[in-house]
Length: 347
Image (cartoon, rainbow, N blue to C red; front, side, top):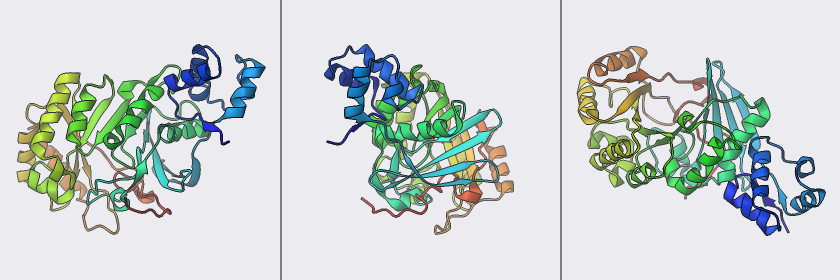
């Protein structure tokens, strides 16, 4: 009989595993801490367990992480990691150092079903959702490689739409934030969505203290439809109602991600439309230049155009920043992750 992989099991699941072994539930908390806080995977070294319990754990369980396939490092220090999952599917993770902040761009799916027309990940289609163990495994791999302090922030901005893997997202976040887990504060975690309206409303009531980012990219329904097919199902007016509901229910502002495309959404008309759309919404706006994908026809604007757009937007909206691209030379920037070197089938 194959052993059960403990990577990604929640505290409640580990407590249940221990009671199934005839142990007290608190033993599950001890095992949880060994796995995620101490990152110790050898049961024989878990010294607060009896020898008999260690032997029984070894008989029934193991701890399997992700298999690294490829690793690249950018001139700016950004690192891109390609993993092969147990069923052969690809998933990518990016580690971005920036002075005192070190951010992990985390994937929630292999591929993506949304098919945003500017995004390399969308070209794969959805291969499948990641398990909790595969989400957490990305962070554990980096800590095993570089140590406890290798990242300070976590953003669900890698492959996939996090809100389309909602249940596993919600199970993974407590492991990341728990003082006996990975110990990353909830305010250091950002969940980014392309705009799954009902799930934004559901997330508002989940009780998380994490941040929310919305990939908006166009300020009118017509333009959003040109680049983001999800807008056909979740129209812009309803999406913005959900964002307002989220900010009202949680008391948190939302980060609006606006990717600038040359000749598409970069005019004065777009500036005015964006200002109208976001007026009164508690938010900050990150403007970033499109990161080119060779097989796609969209163009990156010049730095001059990017600076102009921001200078026109800032007087109209209270908090506007430029997010500079990182890892462009290794294809690790936003929208460029496509499981390099791995083939997949759309589902």
